[in-house]
Image (cartoon, rainbow, N blue to C red; front, side, top):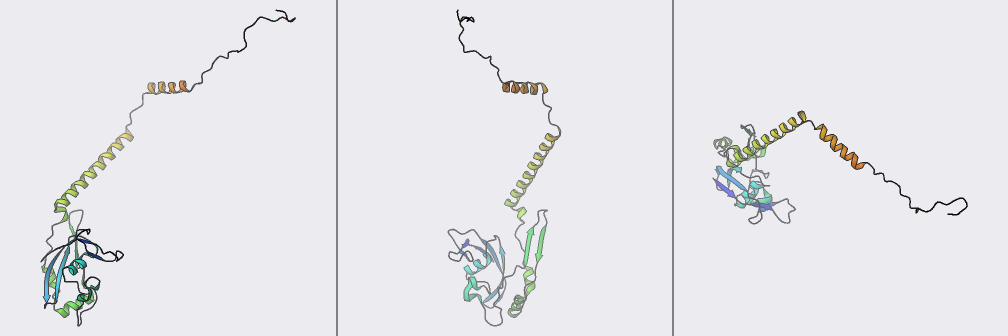
Length: 217
């Protein structure tokens, strides 16, 4: 029973298809393991509980501590395969998932193992009911410090939305009447400003003496 706390990142040159333990640039990854039963010194039934959700986290972590998952040749190589009647398929199964529902209760779902794992368990002498003896003791997310903080933030956000909606509602129903006098004065100013200015025409002809029909002054 213990924790594997090793950061995981994409393995260079694999095109993002393979992960590896990367102490420098990897993302934090944490897995709890508990041994349910052993079959001699070569094989064990291990319960894995991921506390983070990195790509291939369980496979990478188990291979990193020298105990690859049976059938996981990608990360465990030849050491991941057993001889005899044990299938070469992957022996990794999401047997139980528990999710905190927003309403406060939990969704707890279990799934039966695939046929090849059931056959391997029978050959190795594992009792499937032993898996139910180990209770998940991780606290509900809503009860953790981070969970409480997120719940409070969501409540505050909803309250802000409601207040914003109320302000909009009041503004659309009871708009203040405009001051007609001020609006008319403002309109008058605008019209006056746009009204063209008419200037008197000024003749450029200089004033002179009256000329008679005979041309004499």
